[in-house]
Length: 121
Image 1 (cartoon, rainbow, N blue to C red):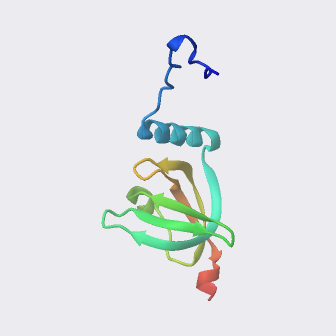
Image 2 (image 1 turned 60 degrees about the horizontal axis):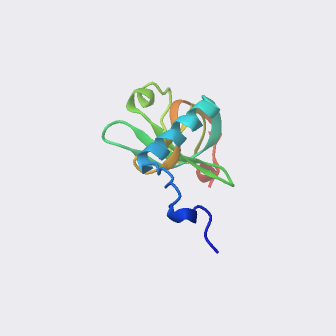
């Protein structure tokens, strides 16, 4: 029995494969358009303040973890200090860091929202 598409000695046309970067960038743009700016509340964990002035941290609650990046210009506008264990409300855009294919939030604003579980302990 001949395979479908193999009749008459012809190969089926090969599906065009996307490059990895193309796929990840497309997913990033789709995510940004689908959600737009969002507010999220959670507890800061794994805070790293880079020499560049950027801040990298996770927001977490009891069930989930969200990687976040906050550029230096936004960090400098804060009216409080980012600290592990602080509960915060952040506003920003969801996206994918293309170089690592990692889902994260690009934080533009942040405000204190109390004490998180880490700080309470």
